[in-house]
Amino acid sequence: TGWMVPLGTVLAIPAVVLLLRYPFLAFFIWLTLAPFLMTTETATERRVYWIVHRALPLAAVALMTLRPFYGTKRPTLARLSWPELAMAGYVLTSIASILLLNDTPLATTYLLYDRVCSPMCIYITVRLWRPDDRGLRRLMSVVLCVAAAESFIGIFTWISPQYLPSYWLDKPGRTIGSLVEPSVYSVTQIFCGCLLLYAAVDPKRPAVRWLYGVGALLAFFCVFLSFSRA
Image 1 (cartoon, one colour):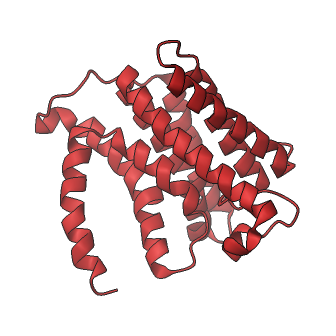
Image 2 (image 1 turned 135 degrees about the vertical axis):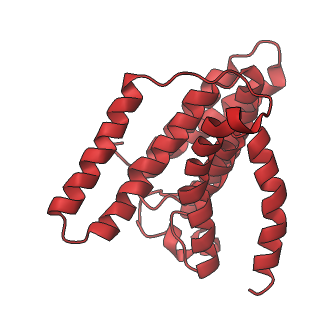
């Protein structure tokens, strides 16, 4: 693994430049990689999890709020309002509760960040950036890839499980894809399927409409395979 540090350093330079110019790219990276990092078996996978799920969403929000100070051309950012203040209050209240009442405050704080704070950063990134039509079209390509990958993993769970890692088969008789739990898998596929169904309503591009429509149907079919109430 000695080569990973210099390689990561070299790749980090263009990555930072891209994020400075287009912070919304962080959402694309997170949506593409995070579903496959729910279980980390090696130290390298754990480092990638730290970068993608823990560091990247927070860095994207920081870059977007600091853009006026480093002078790059940017669209006008949306103003945050009372829902975001309510979210901040929820986080502060949760931290206070953990510190005062929890027996394992550090581990629980990590859990709070992973399950609440990091997704909130992703939400704020979308909320601030307000992607235009081109950004949404780019997003749909990522959503299609995620839905297709999770669908194929889910189908392989039933027909050829020997080709999948053991930790993707922890729930016999249920479809979990790479997402550990049937409910998480179902919600992810419903999210992707609904977005693809929306994107499929495009009379100008029949081939794209057909592709997104098939992707949506496949995602919804795999929701059924999860046998989840989600």
